[in-house]
Image (cartoon, rainbow, N blue to C red; front, side, top):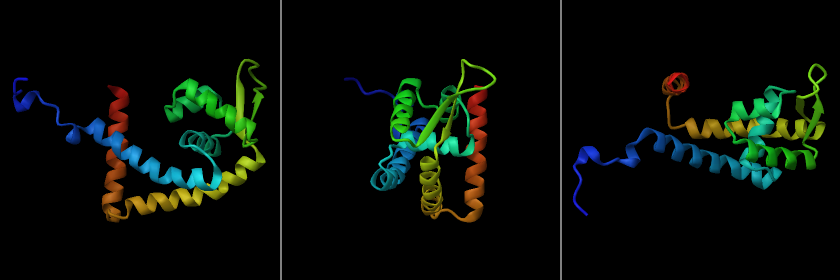
Length: 151
């Protein structure tokens, strides 16, 4: 194979989408061990519960939009959470075509146990940054997120 000029080679380890994806996977894997070992929850299942803790009564479509979890994967995870009685689903009073999902009492208890652990993991991960760097990093992530939505 002929040697390509440097400008035509993608330096994957320095490519932003790749770096963000790898970082996200590493962090999710670290945090997921807690959810998996102690609560037998997958990353996807916990993300659904986390969204429901903040936005009770939303639909599966709304959960998908907030988490960016593909609908078929989301559907399977919701089915598992329903089977374990961690969430409940009901028909919306104002629109019979829409279902609303909430944490069950058991799910809310699990959620209340996981939230402090999640914050502890976040603190552990961000420990390598000063408080000022953490604020800046958060602001930069917000800017990148909003810019990417406009593209």
